[in-house]
Length: 337
Picture 1 (spheres, helix red, strand yellow):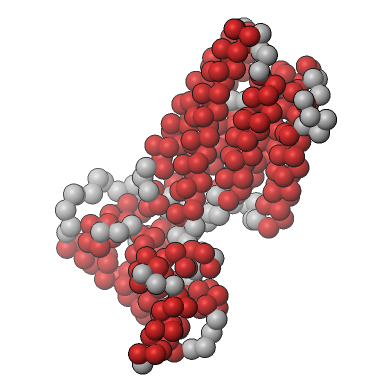
Picture 2: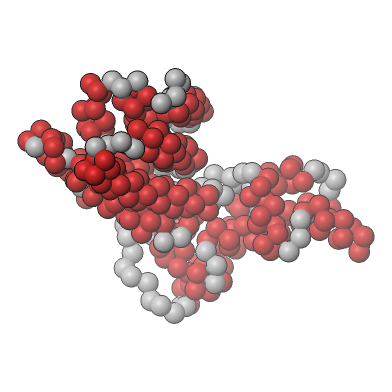
């Protein structure tokens, strides 16, 4: 084992991320608190892994067992808070933690199996939640929705992979008396801890909005109401420039229209064949093209004024719409003018 164990570097990195989140984010927002808690949990877990496998301190093993089921559960709740406002009906995962703790108290030798199933189950739930696409995250900023979606999928895959690793660890203890456990935990599990912790930090970009009542299931084909919704959205963007707001989310748009989230996103999906994020970004790209052609502002200034939170997201969406880079499009457009 290394003199300075690898988990210690992960602990330092996650500590830095946690402090930065605490200083820069509004901790009155439920989603922000949950993601900060996830990072904190993984920071503590990384430190405990360091003490257990780096310095052979056996006394922290019970703490690792108690904390283990909290990690995938709170990661799931954090991402769920971007999909809907948390209420009693979706706090059932806390019962899973209680069951794991009860088994640990009654029969600690058997706790590995429920912990493994907890990781596998909540990893699958995270992946299932992500299949709804960016429109399934109405509380996330539209400009960040795609990135948050990737972070959620990466977290789900890492949680599932962690459970698979645990299966091998159990096998190693049975067949080889745990001969490879220290190496596996040091490199593989530390990597999962770091990936999930950093993904949670990235995903901590949400806007707290009260959830309106869910709508009845939407019909599978476009309706006149869909056309009206698109017309109202277009008016909000063209007349008020609402698309320029970096903090814009599906929830904020649906509240302006006085409609449920799903009805708004479904109208866009059916009539335009894109998700809401792409629909909004189409308007932002149109705004950016106007600014690129009519002003001498830098590409970064144009991207921010058009409503994009980051230049990388702007470049990606601009290329999706035009097939060109912003600077390349500007040069060609001004030459043709």
